Image (cartoon, rainbow, N blue to C red):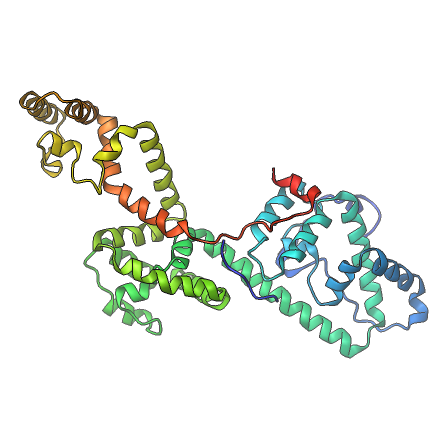
Length: 390
């Protein structure tokens, strides 16, 4: 996605040990499987657990490093429950990789462990051993470990909260990274103003400003929007800050109508811009002979027939008569025949009008993203792991 983020119980025998899904009373982001004992026990009473822990240090040293470094459990890191199917774990990995407060290598390690039934059982045993070993930690070290773990969990929850908000503002999120101004700036408002000041000062003379007004005067909606922007500014990598600054100039060169339409699309739904791109691609793939008659070309099927698009009525009979009359008056060249065949067919006419109104918008957004560095899965995954992404 193009952002680099700052790094930041004993199982009973039975079905739960076979990883049947457990009912969660608290959110997985709270890390319900991480347990550290508040008891203090001498090493002599933990001999067998010390031996098992040392064995894990030899065989699974990275597990030990992660847990003793204060990282949450792999369940919390991927936000999955015990017993989650492999498909769910793959989906969780896809959501987290490149977009987490934890390093990519930790995300990969969490995936590698939990997607394998045998390793997951072993990892659960390791968590139990860790809980027992924690009894011998000095109080200062134990408190430090708890504080580090809690700080990591809090940061992870912050990312999880942002992820939910990002789903609402998916289009806005991506366009903001590409230099799009925020809505306070667009409407000439101050972020420190209270809602009454926003109501008083926000313009309302366009559909876009009315949308900005409704967004910023609703406390919950405004809070989500502010979280989105604040999170981005706190976590954007320097190169993307520079990229955003550079591309802001491009937005300033757009005509007002297109600028307003793009911002409005981004605010109105998480996938509208993607849908526009798909529709534009479908129309032009099917009707490749339309391309030279779509803006920025000044020649359209309407001008070919000597028609003003905005003056054509919606009455079907009136429209058909106007088209026939213009067609009779015009030489039957190939482009005249094409124009007439498209405009007399309602489905084709609707697609053509949509294309003339939106292709430039779609092309502008494509250009914005054409030079964008996208971070998704890390390169050079282990060969076995790569199989999951084919």
